[in-house]
Length: 176
Image 1 (cartoon, rainbow, N blue to C red):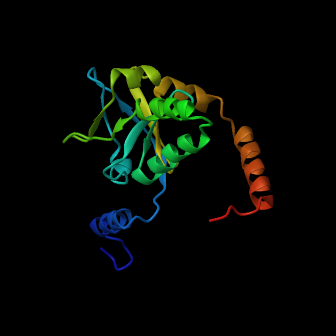
Image 2: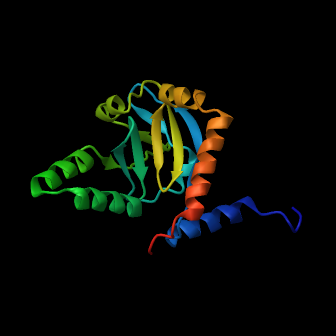
């Protein structure tokens, strides 16, 4: 190994140290995996090592499941609580969110068990795509992901890019 090369073990230990110290980590990338007959799916190692104990699998928008690290899970629960206008609505919102969520528990082979209810909600049949979206991970049915990606053209991405950069430069920074 030359003096400019990074030792892979050292890089992994440094990355784990950043996760352990609570430094924000960006979850990104897409990873396709098959789901077995029992509902188990291998969690991509690149994402698994960044998802700490206490992470939660929850229903998400647009027929997706979400894996939230503990800090983001707290943000989501707080948002649901603050958005409710009445105590009855608060109870309903929390039932919808927490009642349909489960702890992110990975077996010794690195697999996550998705319940039948979760698979039905996310329209998952035999293959899923894990999509890192910065603060969490989406679990998307492969068919849904493929159809969305087929509709994405370079021109459409450029339009989104331009809109984001136009609004991002003119928007005032959010308060800390």
